[in-house]
Structures are given as structure tokens and as C-alpha cells.
Length: 189
Image (cartoon, rainbow, N blue to C red; front, side, top):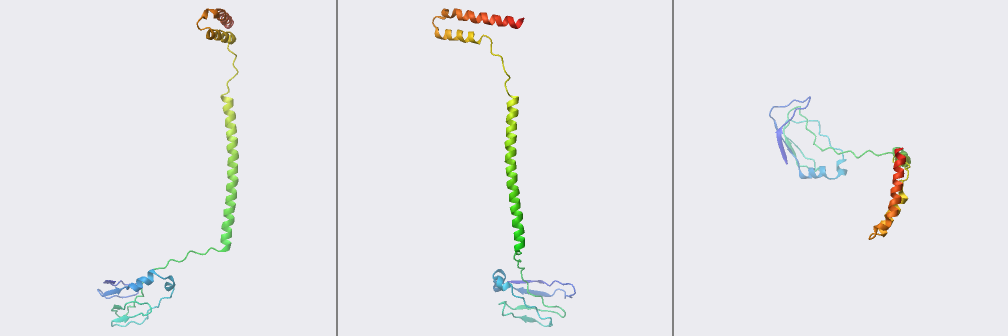
């Protein structure tokens, strides 16, 4: 893969306007960058600080890279190869930190259990109080028995027994009518 373009100027450097450059990236370099972490832990070689004004060809046999071709002018240092940053491994948790986390977790679990028990008792208390209030509010007050209930029941029973001959129940009907008249007179006086 080859990239071409104009070279950027870094602080403290001078550049020649319009000087072309090219970068070649080999498949071996891509495999090394994407592959083994052991190889990425190696220290990279720093380029030599001396710069020549003529064309310079660098070959790094240990990296397996294709040669880098480019022209440099006086005062321009060679740029080091570009490597993708390797993400650092997650920080190791020490035993003291792990123990502290475990104790806090256990304490939280104990508190949660205590709160659940407290919630259960409160639910039982509220349910009991709600039942008591419901019973008090919707309790049917004591009612007086209906007057002449016995006379009414005996009259109805007679009519059920003598469906074809209702005249036999005339006496029960008269007793019920007399009882109802007495109750009406008591209420009006």
C-alpha cells in the first residue's frame, strides 16, 4: 500500500514547499500490528539523528518491512514508523481492594435482607389495619327483626302446600293481616 501527499511541518522544523513523499506499508507490517501482542511489546528502534541530503533507503530486516523511499532536505529528521496504540490491560485489583469490595457487598446484602424482612412485617401490619377499618366501616348495624315474620312465613307455607285449594289458608292470612295492622298502629302512635 502506498500513500502520497505533502509532508506536514512540525514545530521547530522547516519544510520545502511542495516536496512530495511516499509511504509504503507491507502486509507483514499489517500482520504484526494486528497480530501478536508479544511482538508489539518490543521496543521500537529510534531512527538515527543524522540526516543526509541525498535519497536515503532504510531497510529494517527484523521488521520485514519494504524499504522506505523518500527524499529529505537539510534539517529534516526522518519520521519514526507509525504504530497503532496498544490498549493497556485493565488495572489489576489488589487483594486489599478486593476484600474491601467483598465486605461492602456483604454488608449491602445484609442490609437488603433486613429491609426485605421489615417490608414484609409492614405489609402484614398494613393489611391487618386495612381489614379492621373495612370491617368497622362496612359493618351492618344491628337491625330489628321484621315484624310479623312468623305469621308471614306460615301463610306462605300454607299457600305452597294448598296450591289447588287456597281457601284452606284463610285463617293464616287473617293472622298475618291482624299482625300487620297492630304494627302499623304502633308506628303511627
